Image 1 (cartoon, rainbow, N blue to C red):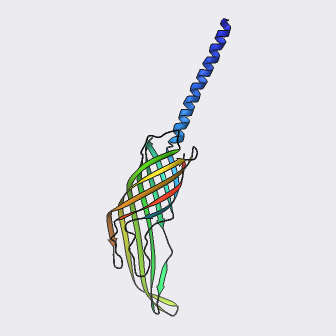
Image 2: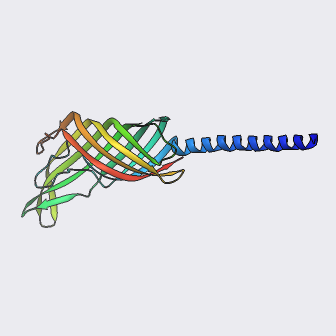
Image 3: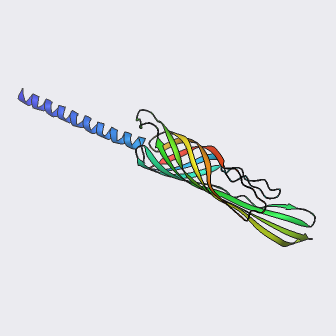
Length: 225
């Protein structure tokens, strides 16, 4: 009888230890699953940044930057992460020719963002959804070069060159959400507004810039380590 009780206690102890280890392991996995530290993201985006609505001659202006943005984020606390993003447009040169004269327009624009993300509610392991409040700074840089030239036959002679540049710091505020597919992959969505803080227009001969408010939306996928 004594040996039976001892065996029963050993079995109960093993079951108890196994249950405790399974609970601890499940808790650690759930915590890690819910709140990864480092993540990389790629988003399909359309962002209308303040300051991109200037123009030169007959060349249509940039009104937005699209179609993609890359992000890198690090979760500092369970409910707060810091994220850096990059998006840009680098089109080819466009020309506008007449009989003996012409213009050549070449431009690019890119934006670098530093955004903080704070969860609106405490992370729940039972649901894959999470809602976030986002805010930070966007550094916008856009330049357009205009070259005028004379053309005779097949040759061209440059008559002049000018540069229109915009360099701006903008406040960003928005809302975001994410949906966990599994331990590593997440779907994301964001809406964001921007307010121009500092705008510098260099050699603004043909351009104008008066828009101070912009915004846009993005959806994408995120890989968490």
